[in-house]
Image (cartoon, rainbow, N blue to C red; front, side, top):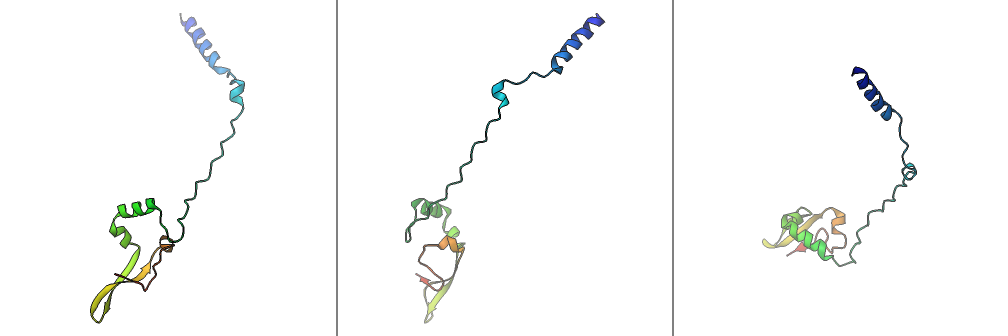
Length: 106
């Protein structure tokens, strides 16, 4: 019986020792697909905004807006007249917007 076990073991090892070549279709390497460049988001025309950009910004809330503008109160003869824009950042965020430092927003 012991001899039969060795024969079965030998057959199993022998079957796995000679590699079987893959089919001819698997031997040819597939060419990698070209990866398309990410589309560049178009800029709105001068003086216009895209609705989706406005919606996303409004959904972020007013504090999000305040993170992009530095203001200080503008007083004339001791009376509050509005908010004077000190700084707008980052610059590309404000591209196409008709505001600049020194403007007073009421």
